[in-house]
Image: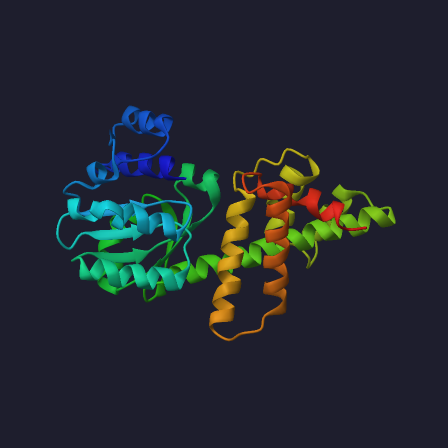
Length: 279
């Protein structure tokens, strides 16, 4: 995700320095006109803005605060966390960064690698209005829509909520196909009728035929990331004292599938887990 996003920022005229554990990613950044740093501190040296696009909030926190890497930034620099992180952890990180003379907004995205490449991501920005205003020139080259969700942490909350709805839709669509096939219906017929009826959702429109029925399993979004985001939503509900049964069962299903299939598998491969446990 970060690589095409960095390319859009370079194309928009920003001076971009980046760090990644992947040497291939660093070479690609340099080829596109960016500066490939050898350390996190070097990437952040004298920067006005930092964008993080990492697997989870713990990694974000370590990248920023581990080894005092943040000290390389300009005073009052703005950190833009575009990862999927737990909203309460984001609020804690914000307080820590403020104590270090820095600012944070959370601006997670939806759209996957395909829309990162096209620069049409949906961005959910949480934080102080003035900070989001300041970040907008960097966000606009990356996304077709920037939604302001409210105070710090609200972007990450919305991201988790979105992926709960998305992940629940995947489960519903796959189980519909399993049910229909067992009765004797054709899988493609089921999907076609769902897409012409009230059962249509994102999974039936852009995942079922393309990646699941075709068994290509190439959506570009890992099963472990889906499971993580839905668990964030479930944990948030628990923290708020809410008993949301559909959310809890969806989170449990994705966690179990991740344990059985592996976190690196494409999330559309969950059909294998659901099929194996349907009997």
